[in-house]
Length: 313
Image 1 (spheres, rainbow, N blue to C red):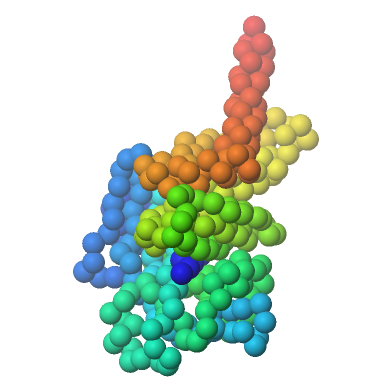
Image 2 (image 1 turned 180 degrees about the vertical axis):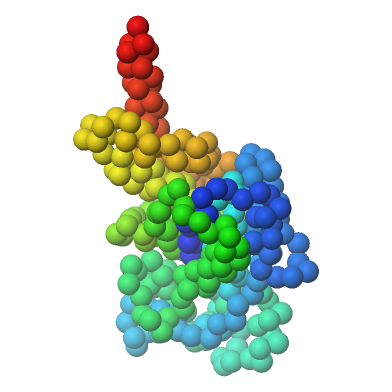
């Protein structure tokens, strides 16, 4: 059995973070369903899950081994701290108990589950999901996640879409978890970057792991990867040591105002998340790199303050 998903992360339109009430309105993708609201350890709102029907190949290394999947994926959107928006989609892929297609009522009764038809080589399917380039006809959770993020962006009132303080690309994290009965925690973790936007994450999880929990963990990984990518880009644009210090500081201000306080990997109290982050930190050095970049920004402001003090003497 596989649990697969994709998360798109980017900056919400507008120059300033939105309020909690505005964020709840923006992520209300399903009228009448409750929006998840959390204020600790940071402001976070998430839409209710919305099922999206799919009937398509799931992708495989070779066309002759294509596996068809029918069912639904779960789509949702979230806003962190009023200005980081995520669109997410995930589903659980299980082996169908019948040889053919069943009525849609059967699949709609199991939201977030896709049933396969025919032989299901789990390892091959997992390999196919984490390929940087996939068959256009295959299951595209990225398109579903992108629509969720796009709906939130379009819901921002036109009057609030003035020139943003930051113009930054969004990132895409595609993830695959293969469930194994003997697994005690995350294992076989592989995280890789492909170009400026695409990230791929694959790992093995215990059979008891739920799709909702794994999706939340991967959304957290996607958020922090975006933060790290964004901070790296801001420092590159500041051209420290090349541009006059005043101009470099002006370009660094948005990072201080909006980003530095958001770093909190694994802050949802999930033990599986703690274990997964421990592997990512050991192999990828997420927090180590964040600390180096953050200190570089703070050093620039400290140096400017020291120079200002000397000039006043």
